[in-house]
Amino acid sequence: MNSELETLYSRASDTFEEMISDMQLNLLETNDEYNRIDAINRELRSKNPKISLAFDREDYKDLTANEFKILVEIMDNNLLLKKIELEKMFMLGNKEAFYYFNRMGIIKNEDATN
Image (tube, rainbow, N blue to C red; front, top):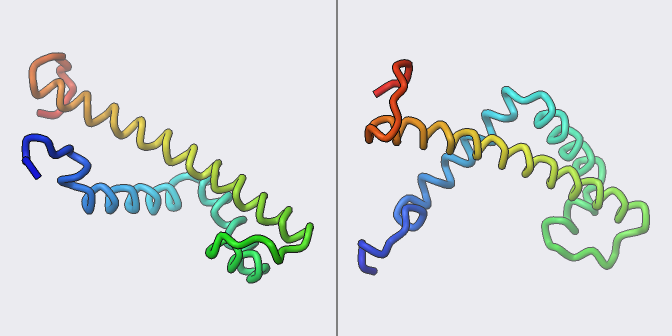
């Protein structure tokens, strides 16, 4: 592939995945809401191995109505976790852009680190 056409993501996808994983671990340690929702999901999955297996295989046909309700709760919680992750990534991206633009001299901030 022509290196000029490579995107940042394609060149640094491993690093990017590690950054996401690090951010998720950081959220577990620092964000009470994220930690609470994740704990609920872990508990629901551990108490309902059939649901956990169905979720992992994406095969839901053998679930009872109650198990399906629990599965929907887990999926709703996953959406809440992703929302928190997206907000965190947005803020981290803004921070990186600020420092990058400051270094380029596009913006000036006396408190910014060079």
